[in-house]
Length: 344
Image (cartoon, rainbow, N blue to C red):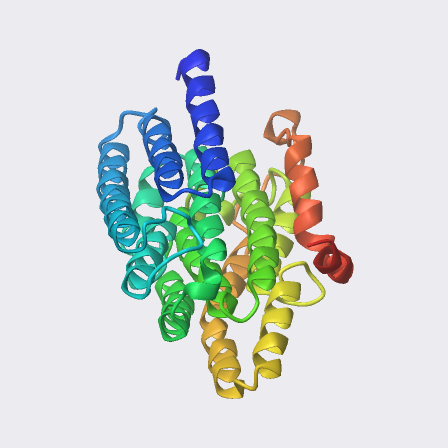
Protein backbone atom coordinates (compact mmCIF):
# COMPACT_ATOMS: atom_id res chain seq x y z
CA UNK A 1 0.00 0.00 0.00
CA UNK A 2 1.11 3.56 -0.73
CA UNK A 3 2.72 5.03 2.44
CA UNK A 4 0.64 8.21 2.16
CA UNK A 5 -2.62 6.24 1.86
CA UNK A 6 -1.54 4.02 4.79
CA UNK A 7 -0.83 7.10 6.93
CA UNK A 8 -4.25 8.59 6.05
CA UNK A 9 -6.03 5.35 7.00
CA UNK A 10 -4.17 5.00 10.31
CA UNK A 11 -4.82 8.67 11.09
CA UNK A 12 -8.52 8.16 10.33
CA UNK A 13 -8.57 5.17 12.71
CA UNK A 14 -7.04 7.34 15.44
CA UNK A 15 -9.46 10.23 14.78
CA UNK A 16 -12.52 7.92 14.75
CA UNK A 17 -11.63 6.28 18.05
CA UNK A 18 -10.70 9.60 19.68
CA UNK A 19 -13.98 11.16 18.54
CA UNK A 20 -15.94 8.35 20.18
CA UNK A 21 -13.86 8.54 23.36
CA UNK A 22 -14.39 12.28 23.90
CA UNK A 23 -18.05 12.53 22.83
CA UNK A 24 -21.01 12.84 25.20
CA UNK A 25 -23.44 12.86 22.27
CA UNK A 26 -24.73 9.68 20.60
CA UNK A 27 -24.52 11.19 17.10
CA UNK A 28 -20.83 12.13 17.50
CA UNK A 29 -20.07 8.69 18.98
CA UNK A 30 -21.81 7.07 15.99
CA UNK A 31 -19.80 9.20 13.53
CA UNK A 32 -16.57 8.10 15.26
CA UNK A 33 -17.58 4.43 14.95
CA UNK A 34 -18.37 4.91 11.24
CA UNK A 35 -15.00 6.57 10.56
CA UNK A 36 -13.34 3.61 12.30
CA UNK A 37 -15.23 1.09 10.16
CA UNK A 38 -14.52 2.85 6.86
CA UNK A 39 -10.83 3.45 7.66
CA UNK A 40 -9.95 -0.20 8.30
CA UNK A 41 -11.57 -1.63 5.14
CA UNK A 42 -8.75 -0.46 2.78
CA UNK A 43 -6.23 -1.98 5.23
CA UNK A 44 -8.09 -5.30 4.98
CA UNK A 45 -7.97 -5.29 1.18
CA UNK A 46 -4.39 -4.04 0.74
CA UNK A 47 -3.56 -7.54 -0.57
CA UNK A 48 -6.28 -8.04 -3.23
CA UNK A 49 -7.00 -11.70 -2.51
CA UNK A 50 -10.55 -13.16 -2.74
CA UNK A 51 -10.40 -14.12 0.95
CA UNK A 52 -9.51 -10.53 1.89
CA UNK A 53 -12.34 -9.09 -0.22
CA UNK A 54 -14.77 -11.56 1.34
CA UNK A 55 -13.56 -10.67 4.84
CA UNK A 56 -13.89 -6.93 4.17
CA UNK A 57 -17.42 -7.42 2.79
CA UNK A 58 -18.50 -9.47 5.84
CA UNK A 59 -16.96 -6.90 8.18
CA UNK A 60 -18.65 -3.97 6.42
CA UNK A 61 -22.11 -5.60 6.40
CA UNK A 62 -21.90 -6.60 10.08
CA UNK A 63 -20.62 -3.23 11.25
CA UNK A 64 -23.14 -1.36 9.09
CA UNK A 65 -25.99 -3.40 10.64
CA UNK A 66 -24.72 -2.67 14.16
CA UNK A 67 -24.26 1.03 13.35
CA UNK A 68 -27.79 1.25 11.93
CA UNK A 69 -29.15 -0.28 15.15
CA UNK A 70 -27.13 2.19 17.25
CA UNK A 71 -28.39 5.17 15.22
CA UNK A 72 -32.00 3.92 15.32
CA UNK A 73 -31.90 3.30 19.10
CA UNK A 74 -30.20 6.64 19.84
CA UNK A 75 -32.70 8.53 17.65
CA UNK A 76 -35.72 6.85 19.25
CA UNK A 77 -34.25 7.49 22.70
CA UNK A 78 -33.71 11.18 21.83
CA UNK A 79 -37.30 11.36 20.56
CA UNK A 80 -38.60 9.90 23.81
CA UNK A 81 -36.35 11.71 26.34
CA UNK A 82 -35.34 14.86 24.42
CA UNK A 83 -31.67 14.14 25.18
CA UNK A 84 -28.79 12.85 23.01
CA UNK A 85 -26.54 12.30 26.03
CA UNK A 86 -24.84 8.89 26.15
CA UNK A 87 -25.58 8.38 29.84
CA UNK A 88 -29.31 9.16 29.56
CA UNK A 89 -31.08 6.12 28.13
CA UNK A 90 -34.64 4.93 28.55
CA UNK A 91 -35.32 1.27 29.21
CA UNK A 92 -36.11 -0.48 25.89
CA UNK A 93 -33.30 1.24 23.98
CA UNK A 94 -30.60 0.30 26.51
CA UNK A 95 -30.91 -3.36 25.48
CA UNK A 96 -30.81 -2.64 21.73
CA UNK A 97 -27.81 -0.34 22.09
CA UNK A 98 -25.99 -2.89 24.27
CA UNK A 99 -26.66 -5.62 21.69
CA UNK A 100 -25.42 -3.41 18.84
CA UNK A 101 -22.19 -2.57 20.70
CA UNK A 102 -21.66 -6.25 21.55
CA UNK A 103 -22.16 -7.08 17.87
CA UNK A 104 -19.41 -4.59 17.02
CA UNK A 105 -17.14 -6.22 19.61
CA UNK A 106 -17.89 -9.73 18.35
CA UNK A 107 -19.45 -11.23 21.48
CA UNK A 108 -21.30 -14.55 21.19
CA UNK A 109 -23.89 -15.27 19.86
CA UNK A 110 -23.20 -12.29 17.56
CA UNK A 111 -19.66 -13.49 16.93
CA UNK A 112 -19.95 -15.39 13.63
CA UNK A 113 -18.30 -12.65 11.57
CA UNK A 114 -15.15 -12.29 13.72
CA UNK A 115 -13.24 -15.59 13.08
CA UNK A 116 -13.99 -15.46 9.33
CA UNK A 117 -12.90 -11.82 9.01
CA UNK A 118 -9.64 -12.24 10.96
CA UNK A 119 -8.83 -15.41 8.99
CA UNK A 120 -9.08 -13.54 5.68
CA UNK A 121 -6.91 -10.51 6.47
CA UNK A 122 -3.15 -10.02 7.07
CA UNK A 123 -1.74 -10.39 10.60
CA UNK A 124 -1.05 -6.64 10.87
CA UNK A 125 -4.70 -5.77 10.12
CA UNK A 126 -5.82 -8.61 12.40
CA UNK A 127 -3.85 -6.93 15.19
CA UNK A 128 -5.70 -3.63 14.62
CA UNK A 129 -9.08 -5.41 14.45
CA UNK A 130 -8.43 -7.38 17.66
CA UNK A 131 -7.15 -4.44 19.72
CA UNK A 132 -7.69 -0.88 18.44
CA UNK A 133 -11.13 -1.49 16.91
CA UNK A 134 -12.44 -2.79 20.25
CA UNK A 135 -11.62 0.44 22.13
CA UNK A 136 -14.53 2.63 20.94
CA UNK A 137 -17.40 0.12 21.47
CA UNK A 138 -15.97 -0.97 24.82
CA UNK A 139 -15.75 2.67 25.97
CA UNK A 140 -19.41 3.23 25.10
CA UNK A 141 -20.38 0.05 26.97
CA UNK A 142 -18.44 1.26 30.02
CA UNK A 143 -20.28 4.59 29.91
CA UNK A 144 -23.72 2.92 29.90
CA UNK A 145 -22.72 0.06 32.25
CA UNK A 146 -24.96 1.31 35.08
CA UNK A 147 -28.00 1.16 32.75
CA UNK A 148 -27.38 -2.24 31.15
CA UNK A 149 -29.48 -5.34 31.75
CA UNK A 150 -27.69 -7.70 34.17
CA UNK A 151 -29.26 -10.91 32.81
CA UNK A 152 -28.27 -9.95 29.26
CA UNK A 153 -24.65 -9.29 30.28
CA UNK A 154 -24.34 -12.56 32.22
CA UNK A 155 -25.88 -14.57 29.36
CA UNK A 156 -23.68 -12.95 26.70
CA UNK A 157 -20.58 -13.23 28.90
CA UNK A 158 -21.01 -16.94 29.70
CA UNK A 159 -21.91 -17.75 26.08
CA UNK A 160 -18.81 -15.91 24.85
CA UNK A 161 -16.50 -17.73 27.28
CA UNK A 162 -18.02 -21.07 26.21
CA UNK A 163 -17.90 -20.32 22.46
CA UNK A 164 -14.40 -18.81 22.77
CA UNK A 165 -13.10 -22.04 24.30
CA UNK A 166 -15.16 -24.48 22.29
CA UNK A 167 -14.57 -22.83 18.92
CA UNK A 168 -10.80 -22.68 19.27
CA UNK A 169 -10.28 -26.36 20.13
CA UNK A 170 -10.51 -27.77 16.60
CA UNK A 171 -8.69 -24.96 14.76
CA UNK A 172 -5.41 -25.25 12.89
CA UNK A 173 -5.27 -21.59 11.75
CA UNK A 174 -3.61 -19.27 14.24
CA UNK A 175 -5.68 -16.23 13.24
CA UNK A 176 -8.92 -18.09 13.97
CA UNK A 177 -7.51 -19.27 17.29
CA UNK A 178 -6.72 -15.65 18.18
CA UNK A 179 -10.26 -14.65 17.14
CA UNK A 180 -11.84 -17.23 19.48
CA UNK A 181 -9.38 -16.18 22.18
CA UNK A 182 -10.63 -12.61 21.74
CA UNK A 183 -14.27 -13.73 22.07
CA UNK A 184 -13.45 -15.60 25.29
CA UNK A 185 -11.61 -12.67 26.86
CA UNK A 186 -14.39 -10.24 25.94
CA UNK A 187 -16.81 -12.63 27.65
CA UNK A 188 -14.89 -12.26 30.92
CA UNK A 189 -15.06 -8.45 30.60
CA UNK A 190 -18.79 -8.32 29.87
CA UNK A 191 -19.54 -10.72 32.75
CA UNK A 192 -18.18 -8.27 35.32
CA UNK A 193 -19.26 -5.04 33.56
CA UNK A 194 -22.33 -4.37 35.70
CA UNK A 195 -20.68 -5.28 39.01
CA UNK A 196 -17.36 -3.47 38.57
CA UNK A 197 -16.73 -1.40 35.38
CA UNK A 198 -13.24 -0.48 36.66
CA UNK A 199 -12.31 -4.18 36.62
CA UNK A 200 -13.64 -4.49 33.06
CA UNK A 201 -11.35 -1.63 31.97
CA UNK A 202 -8.42 -3.25 33.83
CA UNK A 203 -9.07 -6.58 32.06
CA UNK A 204 -9.44 -4.80 28.70
CA UNK A 205 -6.03 -3.10 29.00
CA UNK A 206 -4.37 -6.40 29.88
CA UNK A 207 -6.14 -8.09 26.96
CA UNK A 208 -4.83 -5.47 24.51
CA UNK A 209 -1.23 -5.88 25.76
CA UNK A 210 -1.29 -9.71 25.61
CA UNK A 211 -3.05 -9.90 22.22
CA UNK A 212 -0.74 -7.29 20.69
CA UNK A 213 2.32 -9.19 22.00
CA UNK A 214 1.04 -12.42 20.43
CA UNK A 215 0.28 -10.82 17.06
CA UNK A 216 3.66 -9.06 16.92
CA UNK A 217 5.40 -12.36 17.70
CA UNK A 218 3.45 -14.13 14.92
CA UNK A 219 4.33 -11.32 12.51
CA UNK A 220 8.02 -11.70 13.41
CA UNK A 221 8.08 -15.36 12.36
CA UNK A 222 5.41 -14.94 9.61
CA UNK A 223 3.31 -17.84 10.89
CA UNK A 224 -0.40 -18.28 10.27
CA UNK A 225 -0.78 -22.05 10.84
CA UNK A 226 0.04 -24.42 13.69
CA UNK A 227 2.21 -26.47 11.32
CA UNK A 228 4.36 -23.37 10.67
CA UNK A 229 5.02 -22.51 14.31
CA UNK A 230 5.99 -26.14 14.97
CA UNK A 231 9.04 -25.65 12.74
CA UNK A 232 9.96 -22.15 13.95
CA UNK A 233 12.12 -23.22 16.92
CA UNK A 234 15.39 -23.44 14.92
CA UNK A 235 14.82 -19.97 13.45
CA UNK A 236 14.38 -18.10 16.73
CA UNK A 237 14.39 -20.17 19.94
CA UNK A 238 14.11 -17.19 22.29
CA UNK A 239 11.13 -15.69 20.44
CA UNK A 240 9.32 -19.04 20.36
CA UNK A 241 9.93 -19.49 24.09
CA UNK A 242 8.46 -16.07 24.88
CA UNK A 243 5.53 -16.81 22.54
CA UNK A 244 4.83 -19.94 24.57
CA UNK A 245 4.82 -17.86 27.77
CA UNK A 246 2.50 -15.25 26.20
CA UNK A 247 0.09 -18.07 25.27
CA UNK A 248 0.15 -19.31 28.87
CA UNK A 249 -0.47 -15.71 29.99
CA UNK A 250 -3.49 -15.52 27.67
CA UNK A 251 -4.67 -18.78 29.23
CA UNK A 252 -4.52 -17.08 32.65
CA UNK A 253 -1.90 -19.23 34.37
CA UNK A 254 -0.04 -17.79 37.40
CA UNK A 255 2.30 -16.00 37.91
CA UNK A 256 1.91 -14.41 34.45
CA UNK A 257 0.03 -11.21 33.60
CA UNK A 258 -3.15 -12.91 32.35
CA UNK A 259 -3.79 -14.51 35.75
CA UNK A 260 -4.44 -11.13 37.40
CA UNK A 261 -7.74 -10.11 35.70
CA UNK A 262 -9.18 -13.64 35.99
CA UNK A 263 -8.32 -13.81 39.69
CA UNK A 264 -9.84 -10.39 40.39
CA UNK A 265 -13.01 -11.18 38.42
CA UNK A 266 -13.56 -14.45 40.32
CA UNK A 267 -12.96 -12.63 43.62
CA UNK A 268 -15.47 -9.93 42.63
CA UNK A 269 -18.09 -12.54 41.73
CA UNK A 270 -17.45 -14.27 45.07
CA UNK A 271 -17.79 -10.92 46.86
CA UNK A 272 -21.16 -10.39 45.13
CA UNK A 273 -22.14 -13.86 46.47
CA UNK A 274 -22.61 -15.35 42.99
CA UNK A 275 -20.55 -18.46 43.62
CA UNK A 276 -22.41 -20.60 41.09
CA UNK A 277 -21.63 -18.15 38.28
CA UNK A 278 -17.96 -18.00 39.37
CA UNK A 279 -17.75 -21.81 39.33
CA UNK A 280 -19.36 -22.13 35.88
CA UNK A 281 -17.04 -19.40 34.52
CA UNK A 282 -13.93 -21.19 35.78
CA UNK A 283 -15.09 -24.54 34.39
CA UNK A 284 -15.89 -23.13 30.93
CA UNK A 285 -12.51 -21.35 30.79
CA UNK A 286 -10.84 -24.80 30.96
CA UNK A 287 -11.86 -25.27 27.31
CA UNK A 288 -9.74 -22.29 26.30
CA UNK A 289 -6.89 -23.53 28.49
CA UNK A 290 -6.89 -26.78 26.49
CA UNK A 291 -6.18 -25.17 23.12
CA UNK A 292 -3.58 -22.79 24.58
CA UNK A 293 -1.75 -25.77 26.06
CA UNK A 294 -2.09 -27.60 22.74
CA UNK A 295 -0.36 -24.69 20.99
CA UNK A 296 2.46 -24.58 23.54
CA UNK A 297 2.94 -28.33 23.17
CA UNK A 298 3.27 -27.99 19.39
CA UNK A 299 5.69 -25.08 19.69
CA UNK A 300 8.04 -26.36 22.37
CA UNK A 301 7.66 -30.10 22.92
CA UNK A 302 7.60 -31.24 19.29
CA UNK A 303 10.59 -30.67 17.03
CA UNK A 304 10.50 -31.11 13.24
CA UNK A 305 12.80 -33.66 11.56
CA UNK A 306 16.07 -32.65 9.87
CA UNK A 307 16.90 -29.71 12.08
CA UNK A 308 20.06 -27.96 10.81
CA UNK A 309 22.97 -28.31 13.23
CA UNK A 310 23.79 -24.59 13.23
CA UNK A 311 21.78 -21.38 13.27
CA UNK A 312 23.00 -19.54 10.20
CA UNK A 313 22.63 -15.78 9.99
CA UNK A 314 19.84 -15.74 7.41
CA UNK A 315 17.67 -17.95 9.59
CA UNK A 316 17.63 -15.50 12.49
CA UNK A 317 14.64 -13.18 12.79
CA UNK A 318 15.06 -9.47 13.48
CA UNK A 319 12.63 -8.55 16.24
CA UNK A 320 11.42 -5.02 16.83
CA UNK A 321 11.85 -3.33 20.23
CA UNK A 322 8.04 -3.01 20.36
CA UNK A 323 7.68 -6.80 20.27
CA UNK A 324 10.13 -7.14 23.15
CA UNK A 325 8.38 -4.42 25.19
CA UNK A 326 4.89 -5.85 24.69
CA UNK A 327 6.07 -9.38 25.45
CA UNK A 328 7.71 -8.20 28.68
CA UNK A 329 4.49 -6.43 29.71
CA UNK A 330 2.40 -9.46 28.74
CA UNK A 331 4.45 -11.64 31.09
CA UNK A 332 5.49 -9.53 34.06
CA UNK A 333 2.78 -7.01 35.05
CA UNK A 334 1.11 -9.33 37.59
CA UNK A 335 3.00 -7.96 40.64
CA UNK A 336 1.99 -4.41 39.66
CA UNK A 337 -1.75 -5.20 39.50
CA UNK A 338 -2.71 -3.56 42.86
CA UNK A 339 -0.87 -0.38 41.88
CA UNK A 340 -2.57 -0.27 38.48
CA UNK A 341 -5.98 -0.73 40.10
CA UNK A 342 -5.28 2.15 42.48
CA UNK A 343 -4.28 4.40 39.57
CA UNK A 344 -7.44 3.53 37.65
